[in-house]
Image 1 (tube, rainbow, N blue to C red):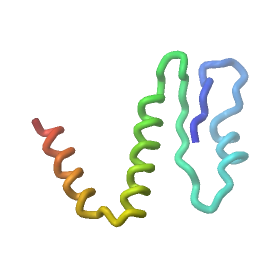
Image 2: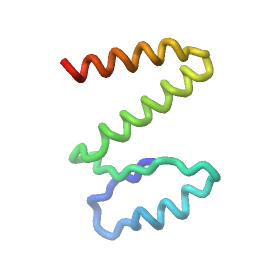
Image 3: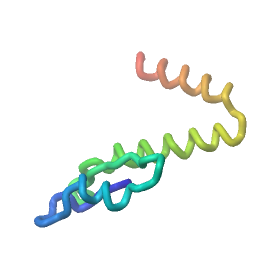
Length: 79
């Protein structure tokens, strides 16, 4: 869940918005963002992409591909 416009005056507190909008049994991750300044945008989109990819991999039984991708990601960060 992305809570944008956090830079504006009189915005509802994140805790209140989370309480009102995130009532499912499995709680959604929450991100505070300020799109105008780019604050939190990359982190939010990165998590969304990871969640979509994880769901796709799970639904298509691509566990081996996940392991290979993780190995490549670790190697890339070490170089």
